[in-house]
Image (cartoon, rainbow over all chains, first blue to last red; front, side, top):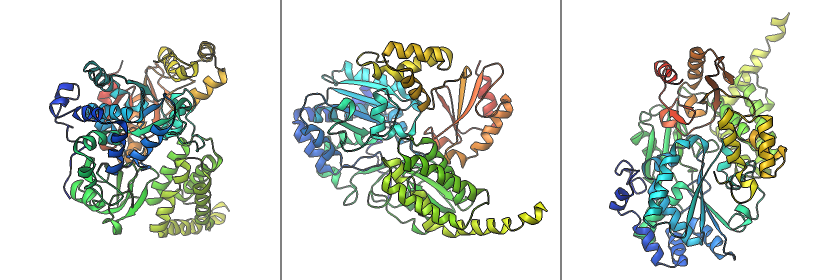
Amino acid sequence: MPEKRILLKNCGEIDPRQIAAYEKKGGFKALVKAREMSPEEVIEEVKASGLRGRGGAGFSCGVKWELAKKRPGKEKYLICNADEGEVGTFKDRYLIQNDPFSLIEGMAIAAYAIGAKKAYLYLRAEYHYLLEILKNAIMQAKEKGYLDGLKIEIREGAGSYICGEESALMNSIEGKRGEARYRPPFPPERGLFEKPTIINNVETLVNIPPIILKGSKWYSKMGTEKSKGTKIFSVSGDVAKPGIYELELGCTLKELVVDLAGAKGIKMVQVGGSTGGIVPFSMLSTPLSYETVLGSGAVVVFDESRDVIDFVYRTMEFLNEESCGFCTPCREGTEVMMEILGRLVKGDGAQEDIGALEDLSNAMIASSMCGLGQTAAIPVLDTLKYFRNEYENRISQSVFLRSFQPIMIS
Amino acid sequence: MGQKGNGREALLGMIKEEQAKTGHLSKDAMVRVAETLGVTVGDVYGVTTFYSFLSTWPLGRHVIRVCKSVPCCMKDAEKLIGWIGKELGISPEETTADGRFTLTLTNCIGACDQAPAMLIDDEVYGQLTPERISEILKSFD
């Protein structure tokens, strides 16, 4: 399956600092069209398109908008989540760098649909170098009158992975520690400053202008039954051509990493970021979709030289550092898992370790408060499923090495 | 940054402003921020220590943040830390004696296509080699 550039069509084609270049390519026509429709019609169109959230969770975009639209009250907020902290993900950075106007147009349409007069764009601190390009795009759109009735404010993060999680992100905008919130209430009901709030990922919002312009019928022809449209993949790791690729959903992992990115001697691929699923080489024909593996579209390829346990250990170290610490299963679970995996890496594992990892995984999945803790165990469980022998070998080596210790001490 | 509206909302922006002045958030600065916004010093301390880009201890004039997440690790991020350390004579979480650089490690900075990568202050540098690092470091005062 070849690349299908719908979201990336302007990237590299226009000057991202000149709104006129974007307009020349048909930019802001979707916004004009949306404003000729009623907000309800816009929501219906997005619902019918089948567009689902591109940040990783995959909730239906139109359904979410409808929930916020139907809430009483005049004060509603739109938040664009540009806190792209998921390991291996850099698509939002690429979109903002090359085509910030598509994002601004998508935000303007979303705000119109849900009835928000104020929108926040939450940009991660690591992407401070994108601030100027965003400010410039907003300023130019405003001067052209595209943002009448809408104020877009950029808020910068301060270095925190969990702030990409929607409830933590809202706390961060409110000037608090970026800790997750209990849900319900969900943000469309009660979110930022207790008001109905819609939080959409950058890529989700960039999907909106083409959907409005060309219609949901055109859009929903692409993809699979439950995964419509195209997806931007961020490919890194052991590939000849790391970078950004846009493909129709339902394409296979092999098409992406072998045919396009030029990977060789693959051992496994992690799809969807640090808590994404693991696909072993034997399953490379797996289609990329919400039904199988997708997440944020991060694709990290590992070749045969890579150590599975070392990778899982580093991933757990990351999750442990970035856990907000609010709920015990995640805070302590990631800590203990890191400790066990650290022992395995050092060759000091015990027979009980695999069972302990599995028990902990189940407890964390069942009882963590937000997505981080609920999914932190996925790489552990997936590697145990596909590479169990590597864990077992490491443990038997450890036991063997330990059997020499009394002799060495004496 | 938006200091209007309710005080709490301006906290993160104000902490950043204070940090920009002296390179970190001193105890005095925390008290000052708390009094200005009508929040407790505990709130200010709690927020400052939550975010990895905020610091309660003095940082150098320039902060080097080397990405240590999996995609960068696969492209020798550990060697990169060693190269920088050798060049500057410091280990991670240390500041050079002249106060020029602080070296720290960070999680994914979204430059995995250019791994190994790092941030110096707000700029991203990718595809790093020992030669390139030495050149880049020399360009900072």
